[in-house]
Image (cartoon, rainbow over all chains, first blue to last red; front, side, top):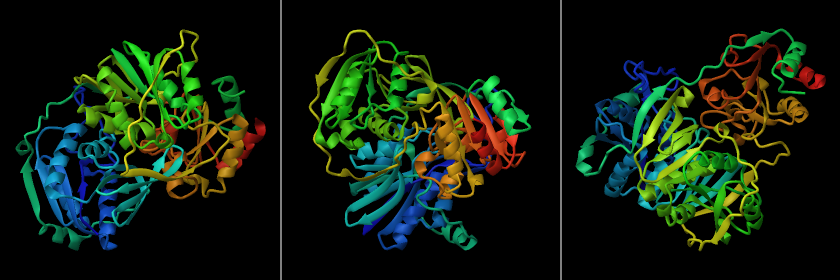
Length: 252
Length: 310
């Protein structure tokens, strides 16, 4: 049995919000926008809970890094079923490499047996932090997981790859990142939201880790993607095929 | 200043996305070197020798590179990294799995999924499912980058000087990560990410069997078959058909979206296609907003009719 699973989670602009680029091109508008837990992270929390329910793990610790507003996301993790939460507090927007360095420090202190996290956050779409954390810890990794089976100190993880599916066998401790089809997260219920308020949530200032958080990237500009010209609605299959042949010239 | 490109391969052939990555490398200053790691991968090496613009091939042939894990490849690349200013791989599941691990070992950031190179240190990449584009300047001495293949031209075979080949000592295998099984989709059709025509089906297809009518159309057009997340989640087709923010990104000459409503996450994976056709019975489906040609129709009548008329 794994004593502790750590699930790092991120607060992001909600999946259903259509983001707008700020007029000064410094980023996207996040003020007064609905925020939620990154959907892939929700899948990670759910997977950890299922492992605990199956008697494969004892404790689930959720961690987030950000301003005090990020505590809301930790409370969601606790309401879903995590046991304990750590909030690493910072006002800076950190790049994945720095996030991975902070997480490594926490993992070193907490002695986790397994880390499950989302494969990417739907804000910057980087898809880096899990792999970086695995490298820094010198642990094996299984990214894009669609199935996780634990037995003894081994994890058999089915991964979604470009050509189909691949299974990797990892010797734990290990890092697993979740893909969409790993599970369907449960809904948070009101009694569990109430219970979550009593679960322990510790705050650690990011500065206490003595890490260098100087950004490696400078964002020069954030802009709207190129617009597509508006198209036409055709009346029939015959007209469509004619347009494709003679106007767009994409079929013969 | 030299660029290192990681040649993803299946021990027979170099993956097409690597050729686009070499296209991106050709826009950077300096020579391009190609790392070929595989097992009995002589045919890959032969193919690599002919590629335009590659001045040196680093060749590592070892049994455990048949299905190389990121744990091993990242250590091999780390041992070479000090000689390179840029390290590039395609933003495929292989590249996305590998390069962040490489970057962390070198202690640099990684730049994901670039679509444009503005200077040796300045790149454009999509964020928020392609709803915004970020132009970023890297301050790292080594830039570790995954490249969106559809955004760059692929390089062709060259007729210049043959590259130098240097044999590398393979790193010892990690025992903590082993590929224990693979279940790859077999198809005679072109690969989704490099096909010039893609026919994709969504939830409107209703079942996996109904994809037959799309396959018939695809065969007529020499097209690859894709799907929306909804169709994959419903179990109609395997995961590797998925086009979108978290699936594959395609940009063919012609993309035909059939019974796909057009969620933002799907549009992120196909809106750079040259010509987009949407066929849906719901005239208000968001897919029509990106389509060049929309047809409001029952797909079960329209698709066979199109196939018939070609």
